[in-house]
Image (cartoon, rainbow, N blue to C red; front, side, top):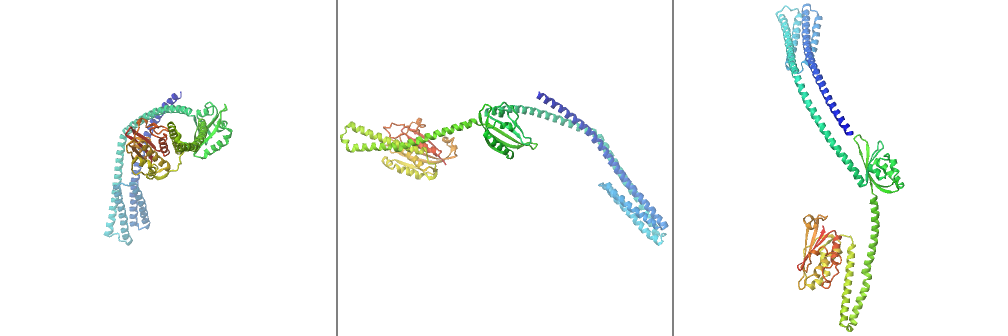
Length: 594
């Protein structure tokens, strides 16, 4: 129903717009034409009339001056001198008016200049003849000549004024002809203007029609967006609100009511009604935060609790930001989320962390027992075995000697296992102090720890120059020691062990093994040997704790050494990979972040 009303209103507005434009165009055209015609006619007529009038005034004033001068010659009465002198002042004022009237017309300006000179010549002639009147010598030939020149000058003035009069009339006629031409062109001009205006109106109409279609499409999209927003609020357990600060008016979204455990729009949206749901212990704090909202442009997150009518307590988190509308009114746009599940998950996580902390303490106690309490009885067992060998070995039978050797071997493996567990425990809880260290020096220290084995097996070890890096010193030295020991342990019989250590700095994007690495550059160190190798299918399990690929009767060990290496590399946020071929050798690749 609303849409039909909208379209009816739009159609009505279109009709009104077209009629209004047509009427305004019609009235404006007629008004402009008549006013323009009247104005032009009036200006031309008035100007021509004023020019002719001033010319007649000048000629009249000069005639009066001529008549007064002749009376002076006849009567010698000074009264007539003042008369033609006063006429000169009137002529000058008329000349000033003519200068304004002719304006930029160069022909009339020239004519006016000539007329002005003739007027000056006439008054100069008056001055010359006055001398003869004063001396009573008017009967001389010179006087008669001057008197005759006066008549000639006056005739020239009449001709010049007539020429200006004729020129002005000529200009008037030309203007009238132009005016008539304009009158003939005006209907066509206004018709073309009318057509152009109608075209513009049609274009405007089409534009309005297209805009309305776009607005309709946008409104449909807004309806979809509004519904999507409502569904998003329900799924995301949040609601929005707007506070018009100047009018103290609130607008709540439907889902904000649902967060309070109420039906949408079931009560008037205002702060007092909202406070009824707030937990009594959080009312004062929330009221204070609301006061801060008015002055602050942006409000940080505010956490508080609400109590629903069924007694359920929910944890809410609110955020608001102020903005100004087009009319300058300040408003607060806020969003409130239900974080009850997050709070409960956090509390559960805290409980699990406490449980984990208790388990870690128990594990630490076990590690202490493994590294101290278990070693003490083991040392006694090995001590008594040593005494049996020294003092009672000659009394044992052959099976007895075998049993004794097996006891010795088992106790040695037990000691090695305890030492490896202790070492793994140390790497599991590392000293987090990273220092800049020379890896070459740490590598040499690791070699010195097993120098007897290296000499015994005549191993050949070559190494590139390693860089300085920020590492945990004792762990990095343990890494080198374990990798070297691993290569020496699993060397082929009757073959000289050859171990090569190579170094390069690589970019993570250029190395396929580092496609998901968080850093950009890494130190790449590879340990290659010519030992017995291993099947590549076990490469993913070789770093698992207690994992062994070979029989313990063939090769000693606890299966912890490579697990320690993996743990050390993890502590340095690096990577370690293994690659092997049976009876060819193994390659361990270490990546340390630069």
